[in-house]
Image 1 (spheres, protein in one colour):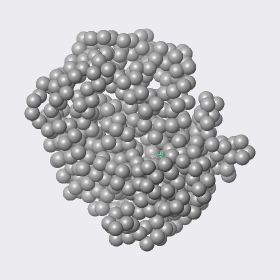
Image 2 (image 1 turned 60 degrees about the vertical axis):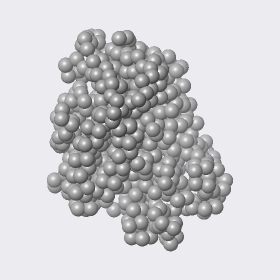
Image 3 (image 1 turned 30 degrees about the vertical axis):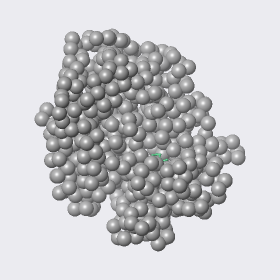
Image 4 (image 1 turned 30 degrees about the horizontal axis):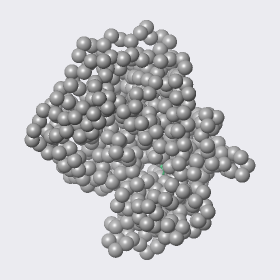
Length: 584
Ligand code: SIN
């Protein structure tokens, strides 16, 4: 088998991976592996913006930003990590501007800022304009800019290489095994440092804003190597997905003045969040939408959706600030948003949990923070944790660029001290070969699509916005069965080149494994916090559950859930950060 060496191997070419690569490039030999062309990475789908207390529109401060992030997280975010992110945000935005990101501007020439859900001034007083943007294509332009910078600095890209395993030397990571999609050749990438920036995992749900590639590969791989996942029960549903499709309609639509209405035309968010209304955090807005539907106040003949009303915005304003969603509404639903409201429903959007890391992106393996030597993670695949139980809109792009850069810097420091790569074990690819041979050698069995559809239905029905003990227990049980079914699927396509059936069969195994951690952690958490809402335990329970979850995958496919302390360092000196009931 071919073996290639690079000092640093970064897996994933979204914003977190590219930002780390740009930090290291020119000084070290850096390779970025991506199963897609880098410009198809899902960071490019982030529409509405990136938060930073620049204060270009009105007074703002990183401390207010930190307060909103922690309150939005339902007090589960690690407070020091949030402080690090919010303090670094203004610098990170100016850096992006200098790298070439074409931000929208105010007439003064300053970077324009708009309101987003849960971002307020003066500790919750009223919405604040904190989110910097480039129309509604912010992730797209950031991705293009960082990719150009990485190319300019001669980062080595391996496009359409799908990583299938980690190489371990004892407890340390020293490379990855990948398959080249074009040839199906297995390649071992030997490295001194490996970083995962493999993104999120929304494809396990039927309705999602996530791209087809978001199958949680990074999470599946680390679990099989004994590394836990943190806070997997917290899965965000974005309030405004296009009805029946789940395609994202940015929160910026509400930031620019859009209003959610029920079937009677009522602005129902006034009842649920009287101070900030439609700009409440996403967990609250998504639940409010479902409450309206459950109480018979939905729109349309089936009363099965609500309406996002942009008709008060001028045609010019929509064309200038929200062109992308204008075209989505027209193309997919035949609705011109300046004339009629857009039918919407919540859509699975973002994973708050992931691979546990410290604020420098170092992967940790237990509640005590023991590092996995040679291994970093950043972006949606990681759990630092800055989003806790619920992420605020526009904090995601910020997380990617702040912690991608910090991981890059930390890897550079590590390389200075490290002697050289740890030697590879003789059998790096055995497990991957066995996996592929097992799938290709089978005649009978279900198709990948059949099992994946069953998984997506199960997660949508029982591990969704509202949860309860019975449904979650059933989900845990059914996921054990799905694990077996996923291992038994048939792969009829035996071709060597771009064998997507084979790769989807492997992705399905990851999907089932991480879904099992979501269900197990959700079953264990007998409270409601942020995006995790239990009908049977409707209150937050700080006495018993103000703690992160850590999920370990056992050999037999079962999941063990343990706890990890939440960092409350800001609360120790400032009573405003002490957990309390969230009111908006
Ligand atoms: C949006 O524009 O609403 C999505 C961006 C995000 O999730 O932060």
